[in-house]
Image (tube, rainbow, N blue to C red):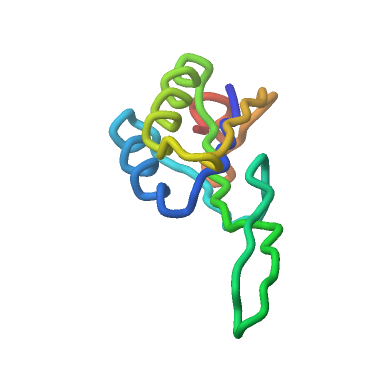
Length: 112
Protein backbone atom coordinates (compact mmCIF):
# COMPACT_ATOMS: atom_id res chain seq x y z
CA UNK A 1 0.00 0.00 0.00
CA UNK A 2 1.07 3.56 -0.69
CA UNK A 3 0.10 6.96 0.64
CA UNK A 4 -0.05 9.44 -2.24
CA UNK A 5 0.28 13.02 -1.01
CA UNK A 6 -0.21 15.78 -3.56
CA UNK A 7 0.19 19.51 -3.05
CA UNK A 8 -1.86 21.28 -5.73
CA UNK A 9 -3.34 24.66 -6.58
CA UNK A 10 -6.76 25.18 -4.94
CA UNK A 11 -8.66 25.76 -8.19
CA UNK A 12 -7.55 22.33 -9.48
CA UNK A 13 -9.16 20.37 -6.62
CA UNK A 14 -12.44 19.62 -8.42
CA UNK A 15 -10.63 18.43 -11.54
CA UNK A 16 -8.37 16.13 -9.52
CA UNK A 17 -11.24 14.77 -7.41
CA UNK A 18 -13.32 13.99 -10.50
CA UNK A 19 -10.38 12.32 -12.26
CA UNK A 20 -9.60 10.17 -9.20
CA UNK A 21 -13.25 9.12 -8.99
CA UNK A 22 -13.13 7.96 -12.61
CA UNK A 23 -10.26 5.56 -11.85
CA UNK A 24 -11.99 4.13 -8.78
CA UNK A 25 -10.49 6.03 -5.86
CA UNK A 26 -13.24 6.00 -3.26
CA UNK A 27 -11.80 8.30 -0.61
CA UNK A 28 -9.38 11.17 -0.22
CA UNK A 29 -8.43 13.56 2.55
CA UNK A 30 -8.13 17.25 1.69
CA UNK A 31 -6.44 19.91 3.80
CA UNK A 32 -6.06 23.61 3.10
CA UNK A 33 -2.39 24.49 3.57
CA UNK A 34 0.02 27.32 2.79
CA UNK A 35 3.49 27.08 1.38
CA UNK A 36 5.92 28.08 -1.30
CA UNK A 37 8.39 26.50 -3.64
CA UNK A 38 10.37 27.94 -6.48
CA UNK A 39 7.88 30.75 -7.02
CA UNK A 40 8.79 32.12 -3.55
CA UNK A 41 5.51 33.98 -3.10
CA UNK A 42 4.64 37.25 -4.76
CA UNK A 43 4.21 40.97 -4.07
CA UNK A 44 0.76 42.52 -3.58
CA UNK A 45 -0.53 46.03 -3.12
CA UNK A 46 -2.93 46.62 -0.21
CA UNK A 47 -4.23 50.09 0.65
CA UNK A 48 -1.32 51.68 -1.11
CA UNK A 49 1.32 49.63 0.70
CA UNK A 50 3.31 46.94 -1.04
CA UNK A 51 3.92 43.72 0.85
CA UNK A 52 5.25 40.26 0.10
CA UNK A 53 3.03 37.19 0.37
CA UNK A 54 5.54 34.50 1.36
CA UNK A 55 3.12 31.59 1.72
CA UNK A 56 0.62 30.84 -1.01
CA UNK A 57 -2.63 28.91 -0.47
CA UNK A 58 -2.40 25.29 -1.56
CA UNK A 59 -4.41 22.09 -1.20
CA UNK A 60 -2.87 18.98 0.34
CA UNK A 61 -4.61 15.90 -0.99
CA UNK A 62 -3.93 12.44 0.48
CA UNK A 63 -5.08 9.07 -0.82
CA UNK A 64 -4.17 5.61 0.43
CA UNK A 65 -4.04 3.18 -2.49
CA UNK A 66 -2.95 -0.36 -3.23
CA UNK A 67 0.49 -0.83 -4.76
CA UNK A 68 -1.08 -1.78 -8.08
CA UNK A 69 -3.00 1.53 -8.28
CA UNK A 70 -0.17 3.87 -7.26
CA UNK A 71 1.26 4.59 -10.72
CA UNK A 72 -2.19 5.17 -12.21
CA UNK A 73 -3.16 7.56 -9.39
CA UNK A 74 0.08 9.52 -9.80
CA UNK A 75 -0.53 9.83 -13.54
CA UNK A 76 -4.15 10.97 -13.03
CA UNK A 77 -3.16 13.61 -10.47
CA UNK A 78 -0.30 14.84 -12.66
CA UNK A 79 -2.55 15.27 -15.70
CA UNK A 80 -5.54 16.79 -13.90
CA UNK A 81 -3.55 19.21 -11.68
CA UNK A 82 -1.31 20.49 -14.46
CA UNK A 83 -1.88 24.10 -15.51
CA UNK A 84 1.52 24.43 -17.16
CA UNK A 85 2.55 27.25 -14.82
CA UNK A 86 5.02 27.43 -11.97
CA UNK A 87 3.55 26.32 -8.64
CA UNK A 88 1.45 23.43 -9.98
CA UNK A 89 2.64 21.36 -7.03
CA UNK A 90 4.32 18.11 -6.10
CA UNK A 91 3.39 14.49 -5.46
CA UNK A 92 5.00 12.43 -2.70
CA UNK A 93 4.67 8.66 -2.37
CA UNK A 94 5.28 6.90 0.94
CA UNK A 95 4.79 3.25 1.92
CA UNK A 96 2.04 2.30 4.36
CA UNK A 97 2.90 -0.52 6.71
CA UNK A 98 -0.63 -1.21 7.91
CA UNK A 99 -4.16 0.11 7.49
CA UNK A 100 -7.16 -0.71 9.67
CA UNK A 101 -10.80 0.22 9.08
CA UNK A 102 -12.01 1.18 12.55
CA UNK A 103 -15.68 0.26 12.01
CA UNK A 104 -15.15 -3.30 10.75
CA UNK A 105 -11.61 -4.17 11.78
CA UNK A 106 -10.64 -4.91 8.16
CA UNK A 107 -6.92 -4.57 7.54
CA UNK A 108 -4.54 -3.57 4.75
CA UNK A 109 -5.93 -3.53 1.16
CA UNK A 110 -9.44 -4.50 2.25
CA UNK A 111 -9.45 -1.50 4.63
CA UNK A 112 -8.86 0.90 1.77
